[in-house]
Length: 350
Image 1: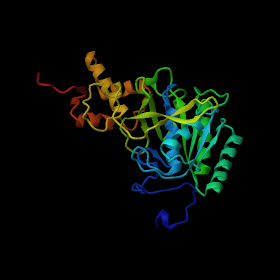
Image 2 (image 1 turned 90 degrees about the vertical axis):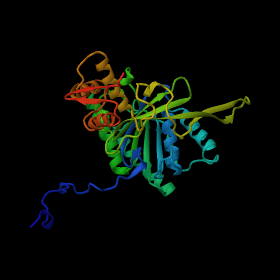
Image 3 (image 1 turned 30 degrees about the horizontal axis):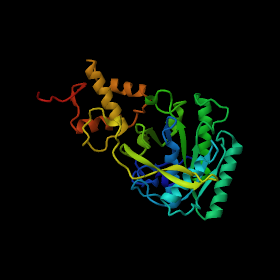
Image 4 (image 1 turned 90 degrees about the horizontal axis):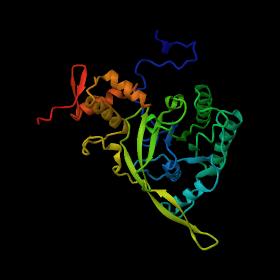
């Protein structure tokens, strides 16, 4: 008699071997944001990361594809923790330029911070999602917190204990609402080391995206720095366009920016590491690995898998699951060769 033939005595969800391996993963934005996920957009100040969050929110609320990717429509709750009129103006710019000037009825704002580490805040967010579903007849599929710092209260985001309480609160909200949560966050002083604060934050994420301003233009470069259960999307760039949203009492135009979600190749130096431009599906992590390899070889230092793992860890990159894939990609494209334990560049024949 097998365990499935008997009444189990444990409340644990026992499953056999590879059972469930072919279960399809639901998505919010296909290939980008998994349904019900905890994800983050991070970058330095002035990198337009909030404009990206607004764009994603608007596309999900309206059910229109984003960047050519299918979207699972649902209501969106945007926590504008920094207050002010910035987010409302960015939404209006999107409505005018993308939505035929029609207002978005499925996108809701809260223009003050909420605190996931506080049980009272958790309860209010859950109640808000229920109110939204009652008003729209549509489940809330995405909750955006802009920014982590504003929604962290007086806690210390550098300590694992306080960050753990924040994450636990986000998990409680996701459990009760079945919505994905997107946390807009700041990068640290050294941008190459990733998002600011305790590493417990990135460890808890299902997906993480880095946003950088492309030169001095109104444009961003978007790269995926973590994708837990799927392939990482390639690095892409997006332009932002100015939109007049109304005329003030002095007769002067008031403008905002809206992100054009049509992706293009980045123009800045994010990929200018010597990797040929024709190599497809290069992510920021491939680029970081390639740079580490080149740096070691140019300095006549040993270059092994173990040493490269250490180099990437020092940059704040999680190497536990995808390192071998990144290395195999460079090998497959004949950008590097294995020479026993050592990794070297291929002979050019010159």
